[in-house]
Length: 308
Image (cartoon, rainbow, N blue to C red; front, side, top):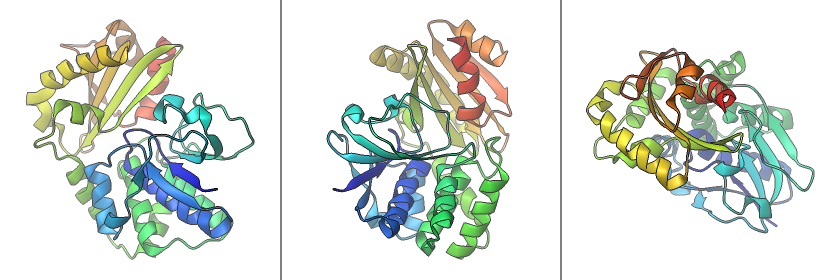
């Protein structure tokens, strides 16, 4: 029986590349077939990575139902981030670098969970543990996925383990200036021309169950967020629609400027005072600048969740 490997909804590069890299590794050491799949459309950034390393025609297939299947999860343990029938699947493993969520398994499983910058760093450690060589193309994709998740080492989630992994993967991939390549990737990621407000709000968006209260948090990482200033009110209006459509208490969108190393926070909430208390800020027109905030999982969720 095949094992399907996939990351969260609204897949980012860490989840898509992680599924590809983990499937290759498992196929070298296990008897079962591991197949990388996805839960949604890939981003322009991920498409750039796949194209750069010759995987454009190997993009994982879409899989929206997993009832009765064996699955291996990448980059999350929160149930709302997976298929609606995830409880009907057999979870054989998890690779993650976030807080523990509410996934419950019915059978023993393999779990690799580390408080570091990227799931792909964890997967690289697995390659080393199993003694399996990383193919050149997969090494390059893993390298960029780590650089994306760590915001080119600027994120507070980044560790020495991540920087070491990037340098070693760059050597395997034959990439000399990995930071320059990463900047090219972020320029692609920053493109907003022609994108709808809903596309921008959900490019990297997750919903969280915070003490039975639903909170949605999205993040746009860009080289320069000033290009979005004329559209901020449009984004807020769409956030109101998202809140109503999904029965949410709060929707937060982080417009993260990787050069200024901070994020503009957009807020739509039933009780905005909770968000002001979480970050010790005063919202003006439902907005606030969060200096030094680059990471949703380390600098946002841990501060918002206690408010509920």
